Every structure is written in C-alpha cells, then in structure tokens.
Length: 67
Length: 287
Image (cartoon, rainbow over all chains, first blue to last red; front, side):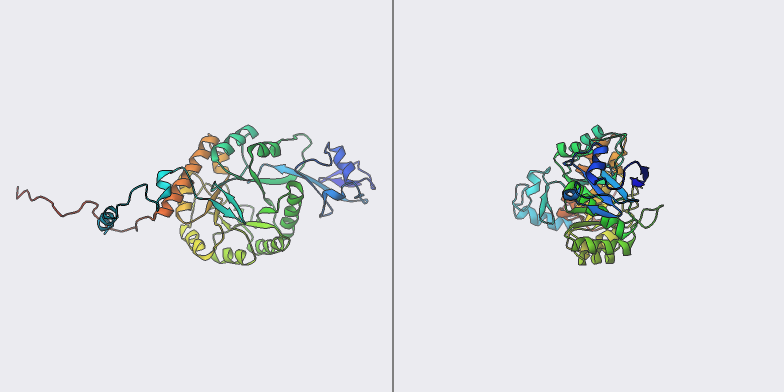
C-alpha cells in the first residue's frame, strides 16, 4: 500500500512518480508542483525514473494562498 | 530652536526643487529596495493568505503595487484545482514561497527545498512556529533552519521575533534580510514594541522587513518611520472589508512612513515649543 497525500491509495509499488502525477492530471512540465517521497525531495528530472517502493509515503504539493 | 533652523533653511534658498529633496517633486516615488542584489520599486510585500477569492487577490496585488508576493506549499486538492500560480504570473510578481506551518528545522528545510523545485526560486520566507496559540517563532529551530538553508544556497528571509540579538544571529548565519513581527500573525495589534524594532534597525545592516501584526495603514507608516526598509502585510489587507482599498492605503502608508523617516522627525518634548516667534509681539497695555 502506498500513501498518497496522507491517504491510502491504489498506487502500486513499482509505479513511478510520473505515473502518480498523471493520475492527478499533472503533466511532467506542470508549473508549481513538487514531490516528496518518504521525506525527501524527488527532483523533477527524476519523476519518470523514480519507482515507488511498497509502503512509500508520497506527498504531491502545489501553491496555495498563504501569508 | 526650530525657528532658527527654518530661518537658516530659507536663508540658504532651499526650495522643494532642491536637489537634496528629490522626493518633494515626485512624492509618489520611493527609492528602490534591494534584497540579495535584486531591486524593487515597491516597499510593500504582500501575503496571499485569507483573500476571499483569486479575483480579489488580483485586485489587491494591483492596488498594493507589491512586486514580491508570498505563497504557501500544500497538498494538491483534487477538488479545487486553483489557478493561483496563473494569477501571480499574470500580475508579474516575484514569488516568495514560505514555510508556513512548519514546526521544526527539518520540516522547514524540506519545505524550502520543495518550493525551490515547484517555483524555481531560491528565495524563501522562513517560518518555524513554536506555539500554536501565538504562532511565535521557535528561535533555536529557526536559526538552525536558516543556517542550513543558507549553506544550500537559499536566499533566506526569516520571520522572527522582535529580539535584536536573534536578528543579529540570523544575519550572522547569512540571512538576506530579517523580518521581525510587530505582534502575532493576524492579530492586527500593530507594533507592540517599537523600541525593539528601532534597536533591530541599529543592530543589522541587511534589509529590515516588518512582518506580522500590521492592522492598518498607520501601522505600516510607523514601521517605516522606525527604520524598516519594507512592510509585509497579509491579513490586514486580505481580511479587510475592502481589500483592494486597504492595499492602496497600505501602499500610501509605507510611502508616508518612508518619506517621514528620511525627512527626520522632530524630537518628542513634554512641554510646548512655540512655533511662532515672540519677537515683534505687540504690547496692548493693561486692560
């Protein structure tokens, strides 16, 4: 089971970060998006190659209004 | 004393067009603000939190004249795919990502790294919160995060308490500016310890930005009069009944305060000092 933004997801181990972003309708050149896996930044250049391990915690973040 | 100075100035032929008072001819123009080598014509930074809609935010940005605007980083919400990034791009402003909501140096550093990925900027408004009720900064964690981010090449603008010693420590580790609070975030209580802000002005050479606590335009003017280089306002504008109008007011307040600081205010005195000379006073005799 892979955790996506704090919730259990149907993302499977072995899927790439790019595949997760595609599920969320984000293109690889989407502006204002960043990804962390298990508390580490996954740079954009690695989105297509970074495969998720079982129990990975994925955070997909974007710009929000804030002080 | 004041009469003497006035007489001297008149004798020297000083006029509003005098080269030493360039702003007198163009009172709407501010001298430029430089942070980390980048120059800004506006001395008002805008926080984007609390606006009722993106349309109102866009109006307020235009009215404020702000060129540096904060954004937060949060989980993608599949339900509301906003266009905040587009609004800010259309406004032509520079993004200043913040680390709002972070309680540890680790989280703040990671958030800054993610913001750099998301927005392609090394600039970060560093916030490390130590208490939920007051949202006051956690000084040791803040300093630790600042040091690490500077080492990683970030331009760090830390939100800090109004402690002159901490401000100096933040500059010592390489922060590009310091942003002391006037009072707690969103409180609208203004500047509760103006003496500390004045002390910080003396203690640091980097740009000084008053962050948090501003309630209305006179607070912004006071910050500038105390020697701040800029003011960051968010809730005071976004939660005002008419945000765009308050943005205009803040812009004018910052301008007034900056001009007044440069002009040099008169000292405060307990007793009156006559502004009209006694010389030449007629004697009307006893009634």
